Every structure is written in C-alpha cells, then in structure tokens.
Length: 102
Image (cartoon, rainbow, N blue to C red; front, top):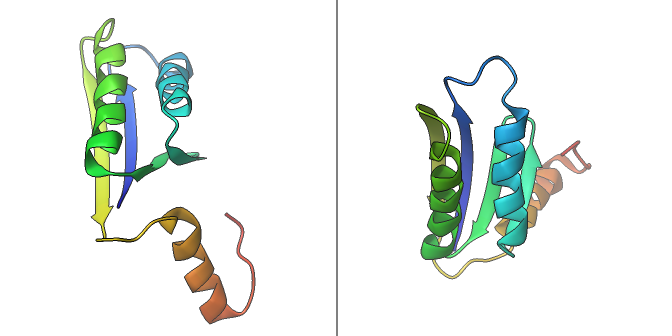
C-alpha cells in the first residue's frame, strides 16, 4: 500500500491558482481513493498504479492550459498495510496519550 502526498500548481497563471487546484481535487475526489486534503497538498492512499494514475490525470488536466507546471511528490510504500492515513496518526497520538489537530 502506498501513501502519496503531492502538490501541483501552474507557474504561469498568476498569484491565485485555486481554480487549477480545484480541478485537480475534482479528479482526486472522483477517483474513489482514500485521500486527505491539506492546506499545502493532498495525501492519497492506494496501490502504486492507482495513486500514480490520479497524479497523472491531474497533470494531464493541468498541462492542457498551463505552459509550466510544478509538482512535489512524496511516497511511502509499506507492504501489506492499509488504512495508513488514519493508523499513522493514531500511532503518534497513542504515544502522546492525546488527540492532535489533524
């Protein structure tokens, strides 16, 4: 199972890029994968081919009308493990003995 965090934005579309980010989030939401939106990116959970297909679809949608696209990607693979979006946070909270703001 893969946990992938990515951020993607156009470099040539001015100061506010939220319309382009929203287009990507529509793709993410319709993918059916587990995800978490953060202020600085989006975290996906799934098999390698599934999460990479979503990132590729977001890139293809963005490059359609953006001449320059920047992307940051972090990937964590762990064999046989699922529901890691929740379990990774729960593990840290368990060590602290309290809930954190997520």
